[in-house]
Image (tube, rainbow, N blue to C red):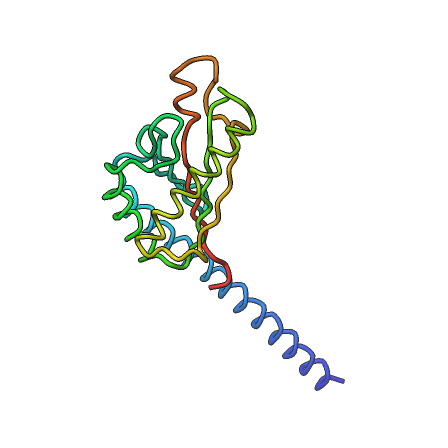
Length: 176
């Protein structure tokens, strides 16, 4: 009986040890993801002066104001921003364990269908530009949100200008 009790204690101890090591490995993986995303955040902050770069938990958000990327009512990327996008792409390519969601936004001026189409074309244009700098299409996803997610009031010109933007949400690819 005493031997069976000792054997079951060893089994229990072994199970607890395995569970503890597994939780440490998961914590280490989560910690390494956090470090990875923090390093990418720091590099993006250093190279993207025209954009707002923020970190939210383990994802990054990069917002380019509309006037930086596009002319009014246009989906053609401004030539002046292309060098900045080259630096943006360099960082994205360096940290290739991420996926990028590119969302286009508009203010509420104009027809709903026009704004939806324009926001989709702007997101696609930003994706195309990043792809021209060798950011893999498989990592990027686009979504035109039109005026559905305003960050400011649409009652003023300043607010409308803030709402006309392209955002990049960079997420760690958990499959890696």
